[in-house]
Length: 425
Image (cartoon, rainbow, N blue to C red):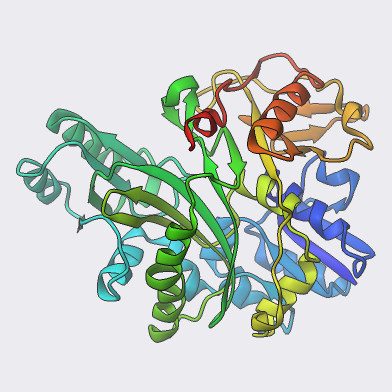
């Protein structure tokens, strides 16, 4: 079969790698893709938001199955557009992708259906938000309502910071229209865990847990990023946590969306906080996380096409979802200065060192091929270096060793990805 993947980052490279391993697939296209994806798929110069061009391409090439990796096209309604043209596509429709597209919607949904989450208020008037904050307990969390590349969340320690945050989000529009509405949320303490799941509208199957590192610098310092590294599984995601989430969060979310007339098909990413009162939902995403996909998908035993087709066909209950009994760690190699300002266009050397090495992956996030066939840096997050191991500690050691196999000017990474592993019992 022919498969089209929509997107251009490390997540899409991880998806493409899994698709390429499927015995059912003989041709992969990716729009727009990147230099790494281009080694296993044919990249086509169509943007992820160019729905009409994507539909025309899918029809021209007789694409059997389209996988949408990115949040923007999902929230924008790409699945509805493809379905209206009779094209088979994996991902939630627009009315379900709102689960990620609007933090206010997701918070209201959790409140209505008693899904554990932090207490909150929503605002569309900055003055009203400021008045509320003057009586609120600090620290407190401010969230731009819409999509903001994983960066629209401010943790404010003082009232002064919170008031400045309101100005930043709602008045200065640092995150664009995402800040037209804002959620003010109580600050939760505990360990964060990410859990990905496949959903077919009624059935949910949980993938392996993972843990992200959002801050740019070691010790969880610096600005929020799209993710500087990840590990899977999380040693803090115990059977007790799993049992609680299955009872009160996972199926409850799927059932709530169905009850609202918004059946969800695709991937739900649950961002969880393990608080003293029990697990609570920090956020939902309507697609694979990045870099979560880069540590979870390499450990999945199933043929990814079988699973995704079962989601689209409403037959996920027939799938026995299985993961390897091992671990994976991803360390992101970024351009120094990310996420604020950075140079790009530097040649990446040593990529051939990953060829044929089982259990090691170099997922491209921000790369491009120049006219001379050289692979250059083309973004803030450049590569995701992932390695598997029998244990988390072994996987971490393997991943950091593999970061030395590649080099480019301006190369930057955190050196403490997975440090929390050492604290696990």
